[in-house]
Each structure stands twice: as structure tokens, then as C-alpha cells.
Length: 486
Image: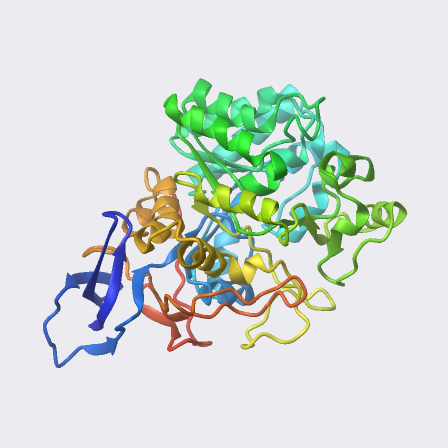
């Protein structure tokens, strides 16, 4: 048995905090309170530290040991790719298990890959890079025929039956497709008791000719079908119109719809250079110019429209960073904070894999080798959120912070994923996925120029009762991550 002695224990399920002990045995929390001395137990003094459930990231694309280690140093214990998903999930889970994983992991059924099967005849191999590359293909983006729609709906249903964690919908990459397709996806989620995780299509402020406003589409579909629907990274799809979108989501919830929402604390996003909304003629809709875009693998800041067109044509799946808000602007920063402070908004990273020269995307080395490139949110989303929202502006208490980062995301999946019912809170019977952090030192260190610097302030991190981080140092031999399936 392991006893964490004398920390400030934050339980987001009850909204309470107390100085108490936490006892862990066989991968579960067995006691919270005053735990008596046990000569057979290992005891760690955590006085002055905050103890809570490990963070559950609903939106992470780091299918790698390197990326998961960065997330572990940020307090994450469960990392799930639900916005994009992978296909086939049997291969995705098998590959992750064979490699070993630092954190718990899981995947949704990929609407994008299912469409690629129906439209392009592709044979997906549960590979993120291949999925990103096909997103810019006009043949993939177009409206499906009746036969194609039936084919990809059947494929998604089979993936759900195989244990996929809902349906990941990259609607923002096919924003001219028939809205009836999205309703069919929502109906499938409702019928199977699962959920959708959606990168919404363009909102009207960006494209007045859009078939339907992306924020309205998700709320209408939830109301019409009764499906559980999750709005991914509301800050990056709404940009400077986030207040209007959040108001719409608030009204939808008040009317009884089950719509959840996530945000991250950065003014830049990351995606494939071939994305629909990065076409040269589309940049002006968001007040962007080519130099708003930086290529991840090379650090190149795009200098011209012609260079942008060249990159989109030659390597449409290449990952880039897109600056859509000015993080040095008090006005833009306030927008980011309002998204995070929105009632019940979930923190999610949209973390991307790390890339090194030569196309290398993973390593077992720790510390990570120099030269790796990614978005800083991969390493710093949670520490940055806690620093800003708890310490700097006092918008969250510690129980509320853990509710946004652990309990609420677990509850999105709990109705149809039994493994999530014991995650995200801190009480006897909960999984021993725990983070112990320094309330005064927790902070992000990753920047756009140096994006793989791990966060600091996570003193201990346990995954399934196993130390991944101990005394602030990552254990490079620890691979306790387990699959999470429907």
C-alpha cells in the first residue's frame, strides 16, 4: 500500500478540499482521510501540495511515447483522441498496446477515415499522418452520395460495436458537405447511446455562404436527435466571435440538450496545411495572412500566398501552427479566459505529436532529444490553465480546477464507457490515477519557439497506481497505460 500523507486533497465530484491522507493499493484509492500508520506501507509526505485525480484529456493526437511523456509532466493520466479518432480502432489499440503507453489511451471512430473509405477507396491504417493528408482532397470534402453515406455510416457503427469511444467528426474540413450528413451521424450516436466529438464547420462570421453556421448546426442536431454532442476547441473555431457561440451553447443547454464544450489556453491552433480554411482565398475571413502560419517540421513562417499554395499542393498533410489571436493583447487574452471560465467548460489540449527532422515522430529517449517541434499545448495546456485560472486570476478553486480537467471530461464518457466511471474524482473506489502538484510552482514552460519544454510543478503522477513522475522526475521505464474502450 502507498500512503500520500498530509496533502490538500481536492475532490471535484463533491467540490471539497481538505488536508488528508490518500491510501492507494492495487490500482485503486482505498482510503481518504486520516489513514493510520501501517509498517508495511510506503509513506510519502505531501504536506503543502495539492492532491487530486489525474487529468483526462478528451482531445489529444499524441499517439506516441514522447508526446505522452510531455503530457504526463503536465498532469495528464488519460489521453484520448476523440475529435479525429482513428480507423480501424482494433489496429489503433493493438499498435498502442504493442508499443507500450505511459498514459491510459483510447480512440473514437473516425468519420474522416470512414468517409475516405467510401469516397476515395482508401484502406485506413490507423495513422494520423495519412488521415491529415487526405483532409485537403476535394473528393473527400464533397457531399456523399446516398450509397457512400450508407457505407460510411455502416463502417462507423461497426467501429462503435468494436469499442470505439463515440464518433470523431472533422466537419470543419468538409464545410460544404450536406448538413443532412451530420444529422445522420447524430442519429447514429443517439441510437447507439454514444456521443459525437466535433470540429464544427465554419461559422457565419467567417463564411456567410456556409450551408449552416457550425455552432448552430451542433446545437440543432443535439436538440433534434437527443444525441450527446461535444464541441471541440471552441476558442479556435470561434476566434473573436466566441462570446456569440458560447451564448448559443448556453441556450442549448438551458433547453435540455446534452452539449458539452472544451477550450485550451492558447491563441494559436495546429492543423494540416491542406485544411479547407487555410486556402489562400479563405485567410481573409479570419483576418489571417500567410505569415500567420508556421510549419511545424521546419519552423518556416510562410512568407507569401504562392508559398502557401505550394505547400498545400506538395504536402497537404504537413502540420502547421496558425495564430488566430494575439496572446499579448489584453482583449484577446480576455477572450481566451472567458472560454475557459464558461460554466462547465472542459480543458482539453488538442495536443499534437512531436516531429524531429527526417520525419521522426517518436522516441524512448528522455529528456527528449533537441530539435523536436510541436504546438506548445502538447506540453503545457493544463499547467498553463491552472496557473492562469487558479493562481493569477482566481477564477477557479482547486476542486473546480480538477472538475474542469478531470471530473467533467470523465463524465462525458461515463454513460457508455464503464472504465471512465472510476476516473476523474478522488474517493475510495476511484482509480489510482493521481496528480500531486505544487500550488505555487505549477506552470507551463513550452513556447512556440521551444515547444517541448515540460511543465513544472507536477511533483508526483500515478497512473493505475504506478509512479510515472516521482519527485518531479519522469520514470522512463514506466508504461502503465491501459486501453479505454466503450
